[in-house]
Image (cartoon, rainbow, N blue to C red; front, side):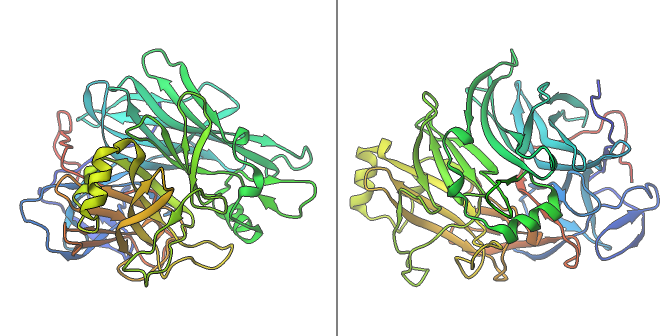
Length: 457
């Protein structure tokens, strides 16, 4: 049963397409004039011709929001390689967007998963983690029956051999009865959901662990966020501007079983005990427990993180295979693997409050020494055009040793080979438009087959 009313389009990759016209930002089709998928222009492509991977986007703030899959050739007026368009037709009075479109193993099958967000401006938000089968039919949509707590669309994943869902949520607590829309404190929540029973096995709340004075943003950024995306914020009686709290944007579980949570509004990454909920350590922000070691490609200057996204834990083999790691350090890692951790993350390095902390946004892979409390950069990929991302960003470590980076609100994606060479670069939509994709994924594990029909365009 379809739980939400939206339209989906399946397009045959490589099949002929009749083109009506094109504009700078979108393309159109004679056979489906209601559809205007965003263009994807490829600027650099020296990938292996045998690479048949697909690109998974969730465009946001574009005026045409909906998940979409492209092949590596992109989508322009002369090259129509759109694989699937999940254009979302919102119910009356609502707006919509989709985050985190990517293949996911769910209940034993490979699904196409994303978070569907339906907004009624300034009043409520509905989020459903949505799963499609190979025929692009909805097989499940997980929401929350709680009228106070809302699912957060920033992140969700399956853990514990597919039996549990690791997800984010939040509660917007009113603080001023005379201004209930804007005067709210956002309490970020980390949850572990038992998929079979629907019960919450673990819950962590930011207001119990993160003081409000740990925020790394100020009034100017707050006013920007209120005007742009209605982020729940807080106003305190003794302050004359709205003040945001954690704004969690990613969550993962490391090899030690601890949860790794990224908070945009504190510029901090937290390690959280799955047993007690206590904060084990903090990386970044004004109260970091780690010292960044100088990086040889950064003028030997310490690195400062600012507004990170997409923090992921990885096997220690990433560090053991890195040429920057000395043989003595490799021996220590092998002898005490529980005292080291490899993370990838996207560093926006930019925000309206305070100056940038780097020359541009970048993707990082770092090694944490949990005894010495140091952070060592193993790999760094700077924005190829030297630009900053005000919002979003993602880093994906591919199985062939390549790195795939989504440049967030700059609308671009890049791939780097094992030697760090820039071998792919593409751009979504019109540079004059405010478009972003929280994350962009590259994967070859999806094989969609529209049921009982050919291509729509």
